[in-house]
Image (cartoon, rainbow, N blue to C red; front, top):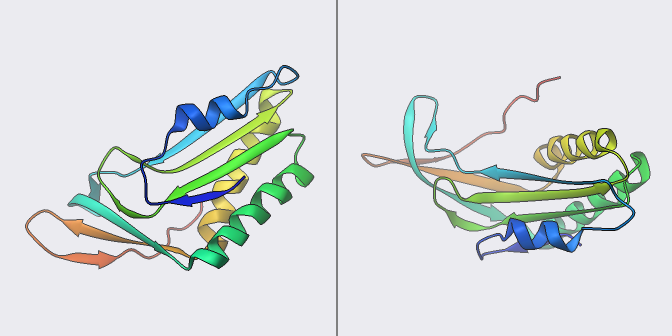
Length: 140
């Protein structure tokens, strides 16, 4: 079940919720806030979203991942509001019988999330200033 929250993400709880006896893999990806970008020191990120659409898109990503990859379950949780450096802003958890499909699905979910989900981030910099960060080019 996809979630948007202003609270700290609990990756351990999200991972535990997807543990299954029939799955040999439970893979968790944590996207964390970095303390730098383009040579500048980042003091925090602030995420905003068009929440109804963002939640629908996250749920669609979960459904599509289950259809496209040999996985049994997945969940995507994204934090909104201020996220200090080193804290997770997104957690994706995938459960599957084998590791290959879990890795493939997790990467696909993150790539699609960056393209499709209306969530934006604003960086604040040491010494002052802030700016909205444009999307990054996806690597093949």
